[in-house]
Length: 290
Image (cartoon, rainbow, N blue to C red; front, side):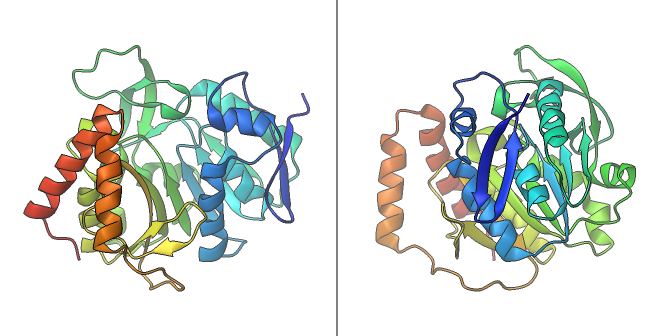
């Protein structure tokens, strides 16, 4: 198996093994293109902290982000609960020569150590919410501190977190670890739909991190950073959280642009996207985020 050669950035190349699938990221890789949704995230990593640095990829999927980081010279741990996805990552690792070894941990990460029901769905695999009735498998679950102890890391320098709604559980499960003073940069997806399964929201995540000293930046598609608005109508957003101020940063969106984004979200043929708008509005009326 030779894999598919992709170039995440000038001077950075690697080979990725992927299944036969119509999922957009897989189609891009099979066509020799680094997926567009990952380009901005990878650009954020390279701007935020140079290699060598420790990068923890929570929710690795097929390894597109974590292995690109390894190809760029970072020391990487990739966490993936879906054993099929984890095997594809291992195949890719075997085809590349990285400056540092890549560690793959086959587990879910959450609020407690133990076992969890996991719904495997390609890039959308998630811990099964209470009362869910989808087909699941039992997987190992660790808190962030337990995971770091297993890989012999005191603290990573950068954490990318895309775990379909379990982000709040991870932060709560690591409360004592954060209390010890650990403050890595956090690049995380805030999916209002999946977060709602567990009683969370993007605003709740921001409130948790703001309380322990983090500043937030909205990540543009091209990797540029923007001052975020309290109300965000889009159901899926990427944020970078950092304890130190970052520059350059684009200004907050104008009220007119925010109104246009809201109207576009309400017109979407997606009930979860429309429901998120009303939840987000209710959230800003009852909460305060610095």
